[in-house]
Figure: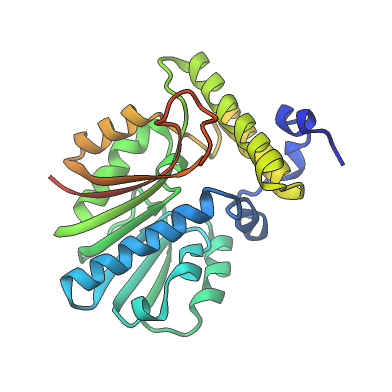
Length: 261
């Protein structure tokens, strides 16, 4: 067993490259906060379907392995008209097919979520850990694409990891390191997680430091980008951490319910 400091340093992260590895991706999503975002996000989907009183259409951008399907009740699935999942990784989509089976309402598309176009608009758009997988310079185009695919009375459910505030590249690196170092410590000390998920978190931290595959933002920047895309926040729920481990309450895992302005 490695020491806590060893994991936090990122020393073993190179062995846990989860990009395009569905098995490792599913494991890194199976930690406190990530699960709770999916649970809360699935509640928003059911609440919306009940409110509109009809079957709904869903677009899931950067859908990964479609883990959110594990949290959707049979009641919700009876309210589903169609579901389109988009991801740039075919290996993730291959794993997602195992959750979907032969259900004709589902369509999986191997495409860049920024460049993806669909002829219809959707009642609900899911963006689960999606925004931070888009390069900073492409984030505005990503959000504009979400806006263009959303019905006027539809909603977007963003599930996002928000890092401490920063104003330049050096501060951003420090913010990302603080976020994941404290997350690793929280998993070990407060949740008794001591398996390879800790090493995977160390790998995520290294992705952030390398500016590869992970491009997380701070709270005010994220909401500023939403506003610039004519999207507004209806509600926000913070699901992690439960304890106060960051000085800024706007740091952690959040579920944002969003609509068009």
